[in-house]
Image (cartoon, rainbow, N blue to C red; front, side, top):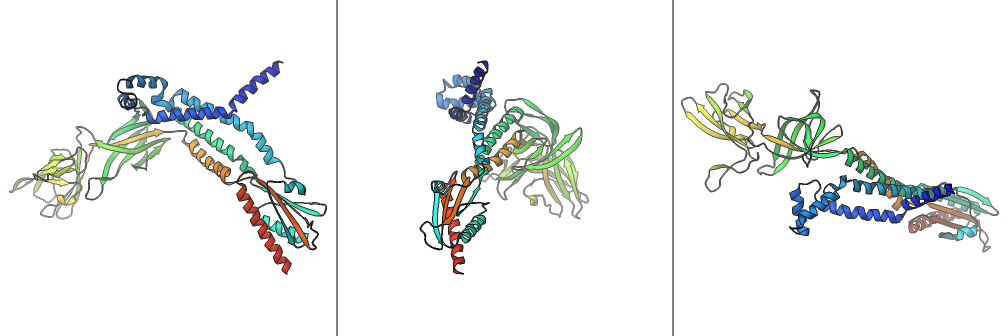
Amino acid sequence: MENKEKKDVFDIIWDFFSSVKLAVVILISLSLTSIIGTIVEQRADQATNIALLAKFFGDSMAPTVYNIFVKLGFMDMYHSWWFVGLLVLFSINLTVCSLDRFPKTLRLVQTPMKPQGENAIKNLPVKKELSVRSGQTTAKDEVLNSFRSSRYRVFEATGGNAVQLYSQKGKYTRFGVYVVHLSILLIFVGAIIGARLGFRGFLNLPEGDSYSYIYTSDGRTIPLGFTIHCNWYDTIYYKDTNTPQEFHSELVITEGGREILKKVVEVNDPLKYRGITFYQSSYGMIPDAVGEFIIQVTAKGGQEKTLRLFPGETFEISGEDFRGTIVNFSPALTRDSRTGALTTFSDNMINPAVAIEFDRAGEGKSTGWILKRIPETGNLPDGARIRFLDYWGVEYTGLQVSKDPGVGFIYLACILMTIGLYACFFMSHKKIWVNIGPDPSGEKGHTKISVGGTASKNRLAFEKELEKILAKASRSIEERSKK
């Protein structure tokens, strides 16, 4: 009695988790909560979500609804214990359902085909008959060749005055649904691992600076376990416009004072190291930063030199009788169309320009602007050239940083799901029996071919395939009969 009671309890639990109704309830719960998680901005600041909720519940109710949502975990839903619990529950349900139905499928796959009686063949879902003018041996050979050309492995059995051919194809496609189930489980496993062991954050990394940690949206810091350094950042604009074409930065990974990896990252070409990915996502100017002007000077005779200067510093060109001093800088220089005056139209380095005061012996001082994107502005009257290459150390590269240790499971799941869905929707388990014997009409020299078969899905396509095979066999028999 005690063993029976334990078995009954086990059966109850098993029946609960193998229920399709449970799967439907869980899927509906996941769908409804995911809608909320999509509308409410995850891990955002309080003011942003209160403003969003005010559109649905009004200004007076929005703070109360926000507090309720916080307690329910909707502000970081995909990391909440109950959402992960729903995924685990659905995974258990899917696993038990698969295990409950798998033995029956396995028996269908493992059961060997056997010859069938002629009456049994006539009662199969798909059946065809034809009478050919040929001997039984000729008919059998051509039908056999026709099935083999369609990649069927054919077995033969003899009974009485008839010969029977039988074959099957695609028996393992019955496992396609279980491959899909496995892929769903792997997606859940990858999502749970990513939610628990992964992270997402950001880092505004100035040129020339190094960091060994990143920030999350809620203000936490996450150590990287190594140091990331930005050598430089640069924006490339479309010609004759102020529209950015691409922006990229050179990043260096160091550990223990040793350079491990160097890469120029740009949009859609991130840096990856130790499972952490750094995406180029934004850029900007560092407030009140003082950097170095990188200037290339070329003397009249062709001698070239690259200088790194701070604001106010003076330089000379070899062989020339004047000196230059950096006196001003504009990140975005333009000329006012109404007044003609030079003005700065943006805080970002859209059209950077440096003002240089020239002091030539006997001619006094004069000031000129040299623009980075218009090198010709640095051509001097006597043939010397000054090129403004960069104002280094005043920009930062904005990096989105993520680590998802479960992504490998998800990639594998996508491959398995593609295979499983293809097997489920485009392939089927087909069984065919062909009985070849004397024509019961008694017509001399004729043989009757009776074909019957079953298909686990897509019966119409199976019928067309059988018609094509039989038509090919019939033509071959007719050609042999004429010889």
